Image 1 (cartoon, rainbow, N blue to C red):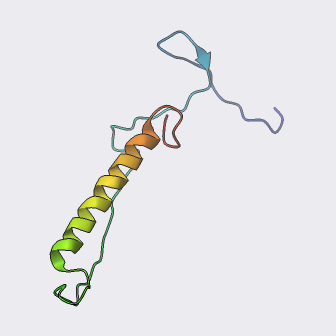
Image 2 (image 1 turned 90 degrees about the vertical axis):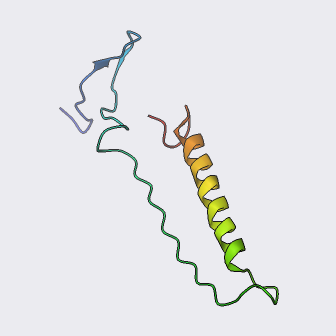
Length: 82
């Protein structure tokens, strides 16, 4: 064989034949997303700075947005689609 890869052909459930990535996103392997946020609040929010409640809301909004982006990327044609 030359520089090209030797890869097995796989037949999909729809009958198509081709090289396929093998693996499962719902097993122990796959995509792992584990955000860590470190937010230090030095102020009670009285002088225009963000307060603890607003900081908590911000973290919640960031989490929701990241989840939405990840879901979008897993759809057909997305960067994380199989």
